[in-house]
Length: 202
Image (cartoon, rainbow, N blue to C red; front, side):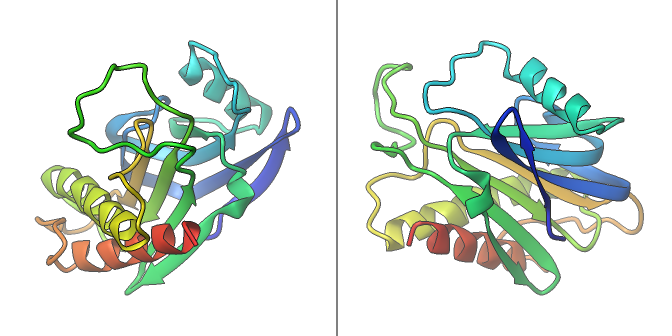
């Protein structure tokens, strides 16, 4: 599913719209958690972005675009028009990859605010419904695939401190119970996410 591209306030925004609400899991500032979502947006912001209310900002962008109902929103300093999309066995991964000047190691001891701008945002569409437990597992699968791509590209880190993931699947039908990298859906998800991040780092 190809996102639509828009400009809001001079900054590009990608929008995914659903004909029927998806079941989603999101770590983004707007619409985070698990629930039904009708749209997703990934918006570019300036490198010196300092708003303390990103959820409200995303809601403003959504309203400007006429998006209604529950949705999920992500922000990044990357130009979202540089999104990389990869598909594997019906799974689509759309990733904007920015590591800034200093990617981070997840388990490194460092001050909470000692970071450079950089964000890897992944929006992934799955062809079948996953159980809530499988959705949580699938988020971990995306993180593993991302870390593998960073390692293979020689990037000294496992990601950035502001990475976000949104997974979307049908809200009805039989639920797949597993989302790990060797499961029926998690395997293609891992490969698609890995390929998108790997290409985005090139």
